[in-house]
Length: 448
Ligand SMILES: Nc1ncnc2c1ncn2[C@@H]1O[C@H](COP(=O)(O)OP(=O)(O)OP(=O)(O)O)[C@@H](O)[C@H]1O
Ligand SMILES: [Mg+2]
Image (cartoon, rainbow, N blue to C red; front, top):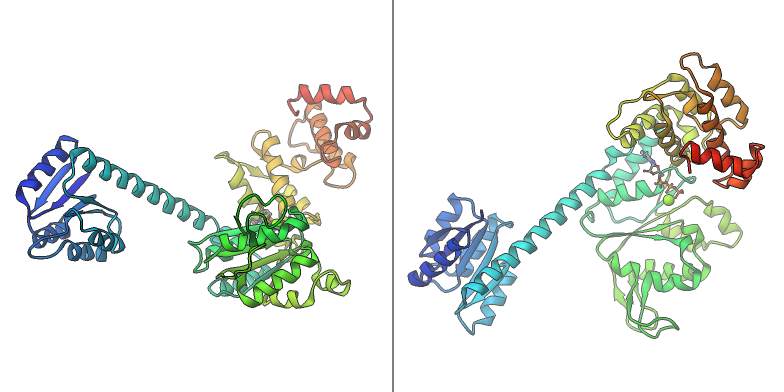
């Protein structure tokens, strides 16, 4: 039940309003002066305050100001006299949620209160979601158990609080995007947007409009005005992922934007000041690209104010056990798994061309296929060691468990499919069986 503080010097009107509200399930506490109202406000908890703007002792505006000094959450609705629109505007500027103009009926009173409560609810949900997001990318959710990764995080932590442009370098799957998010959500811009642009996914000729926006008619197909990613990121951060794939034309435009801190929408002669922090990432060797004339050197220097290189997983194998734990927790859905040491050993001998993403996929698969919640050598993809037969051997030679023929078959099939990127015809060839035999097995084992 919502509790309302009603502050109005007009005793009769106060009585009417209180009656209407109580009839509709609200609890009402009334005060006849601003002073009395504030006293009640300081001593009790309320969800809503209804405050008359014109009172002899303390004006409603002053009451509103004092409420807002200590309480941003409570809904405040101002009651104004007919025709005093300036007052209402001033009240909203000072933090009133809405206003009611006298005279008003019961309908309008209830409607206004409900509307404002709804908006407030949405705002709260929003902050809640944001908090969850922020929690998700705190640095402590990013595993860093090697001295190399500790250096990376230290650097990231230091730049997070600044507006410096960061260039994240690293092989595919090393966690570049995760680090970019961590930097944003640990920066003063964390409550403003983080906008990601995946450079290779956007064709060259559309990139400029994607980044900087366009006016209607700027080019064929520009049917209405559109904001670019830089404008959408205003106040926040833009993450330019795979920057090495940016076309040469757009490289020049981007350089100008970074230098001038302003953008021009396509087809528009006006410039717009923007306040955007830039984080870029790539798995390419930009220095080589510069020598080959494929990446502008001046843009490189603009972007790499703070370069951070994430080392490949094979250079920090000591982190594998921690990462295994981390991903099992993430994907186990409450199940408890026993991880056998030989599983970790095998992982530590692997060179992980796909880095952490590869490890993550291996664990997801291991969890799905695990029998009796055990993660063993048999949980590894059969193509894990180049030779398929090796892992089949290790399957049957593992004396700790009784492997059924069916299990071995299942693993071999999964391995073949992984090797061929899911292509069933090729997998069938690899397994030396006709395609329909493979399809039949897939169906039988529920692996479709
Ligand atoms: N240090 C880490 N701790 C926990 N999870 C990580 C870590 N690094 C990466 N990951 C996870 O590994 C996966 C790949 O990371 P991410 O997408 O950030 O890599 P990337 O370098 O951007 O890859 P790509 O080059 O393929 O785009 C994600 O699921 C990410 O959450
Ligand atoms: Mg990425």
